[in-house]
Image: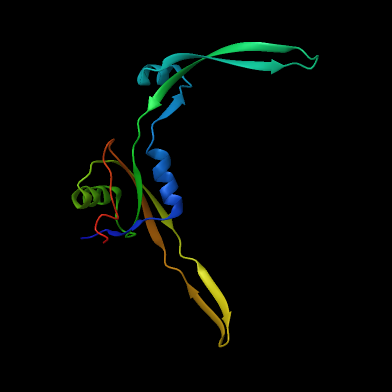
Length: 147
């Protein structure tokens, strides 16, 4: 049974994909995350202006680790699809390894508009969106079959 209705190729989703597709440096906040991610000690210097006009140079030690790039893609899926089914279908369809699937349900909204014929009432359908995170190095090309 096909659970994926269509891939989300919007400007907002493209920004999410671009943001997640480059490795980032992250500051470790707790001792646990320092140990878990093998964070490296880094010294940062900054200046502080006091009220009495003096300028002080201070130094702070922070622990930084690099988060690898993981591509994220959005899909509109059927409302009755669960994360396991979505993961299986994306892995078989696009031949990639899926690390995680995050889902969101959107409620249908009522809409009204005034026309020559009078007030026209209707509603937009409810849908479910899935954000899929792929393994490092994997990529989905939606435009490969367009000529």
